[in-house]
Image 1 (cartoon, rainbow, N blue to C red):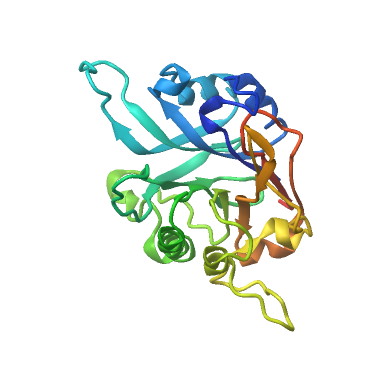
Image 2 (cartoon, rainbow, N blue to C red):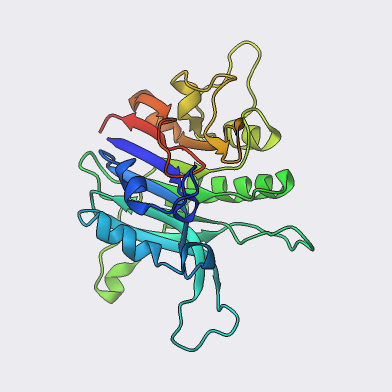
Length: 283
């Protein structure tokens, strides 16, 4: 099973050109896809409906979208497009349930601070149901990212206890969807390795034992696969390509640790200022 996460910067590549076909080409071969910075009605990319466009380019995938930002542009009429900014999950297999989790956020006075979300998808994969989350954390404040991480971990770890998106569905003639324990958190976390917010998610590294898989602490797949070295990066400044940071990750639940086969960042992709993060797990 191949999974990929990609912040697609509302369609613009390192060369400043909008090209959704190029982005989709970078996703070839994926079974489950998590996308961030997917927009509708955004002035910067000509108000294109990226959700519909991606659906059209990937017709064999099940797709769900969750918008954090959803506002009416100035001077817009009752039937004009709304400005939406959010995340998608796409899957070769049915997405049997989904939720859009609004991550904690505080008001800022000057710097842009969009409402961030995690889109949760319960996927009926051949080896058994699995949860995939497309995540986009705040880009300004480490304190806010830590609050968002605690909220996200609580929902991911306690999914089965909370009953997911539907319980008791037989009352309305709908069977309850599965409640899988295993999950993957994929996305743009806007944090660098070993930062306080990274450790809030992955746990502190013990001097002797390092990091061990724990039920309440997801594993960084790139780190577990040996990819996450000091020179690693997943984002590049289009105006100064020597300015690079590692911001994008795939965190897997502890039950998937033994099934992880590989993980890497595709630094040859040029469809965005971020680069796709790929992982492969058995199943």
